[in-house]
Image (cartoon, rainbow, N blue to C red; front, side, top):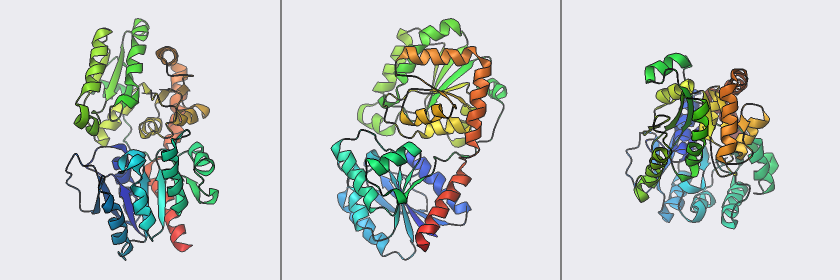
Length: 377
């Protein structure tokens, strides 16, 4: 099977780029042939690897139809996989992507990374049209699949649920990792990913004054660099605000910023040394979180605000979900896990059971089966 994946791609540093590379690498291990159409933002110049056959300039509308026409004439491409996230494509709510899909004459699988329960009219129109045009629509949760069918009018028979893949992080001893990284005897709460205002990190910082009076060894790790596009537009204003908040609350001994993009091995280390993974998204419509999927897959105890993806974890008793996004609600749940070792162990075991099912080799196999079924039909 010869597949073209459309989306952002390494070395660009974002969740979709990481997903695209992981999907390609794991499909290649199954014997599939995967090339890439990389969506490149206008603010950076990327040195793409050899597998990138096409570059879609995000804000150049003509690139979308031109690339589709080039793909149509390429006999070495059987199937296209389109990664969808509103922000990575040009136009209002990424509507330039419709120029690509409407000109495309080859079957394509739409992978939905954000399926909003309360979209704007424009957002709904874009995703609805993509769902109508796609040969198959992949959602990462049952909730997203239901939304795709009911709100975005995707035919139910072409909607598939394939969960977010997890890299095969080597499992390591928590205590040993803490010693190696200088966090021996610390209770580690971690949030990781590209940092920006939509992450809710300031909410977490405001939970800490109450918690550190009870848990003197508590340390909150904020792992990840600021989103490159945010830095381009406004510098480190958001991170500076977080730093000022830490100082204002006297939390310098309880918050540590790891200000860089971590490669998989080091990221695995931080996850495996974590005691509680905290997912504080303020937007309730967050239908998928790659970072939360990674933490669940590594068997970490989870505390989260009540966004859609976290509610799924809560329903499966793999984490504790706050009723709202207030610091008080998060602090209550964090304190509960920190005070109840048996609860923490129970949550970790339940999370780890999911991790065994979402390793990338298993997830890639599902994409391969879907692709082969499309080409045979």
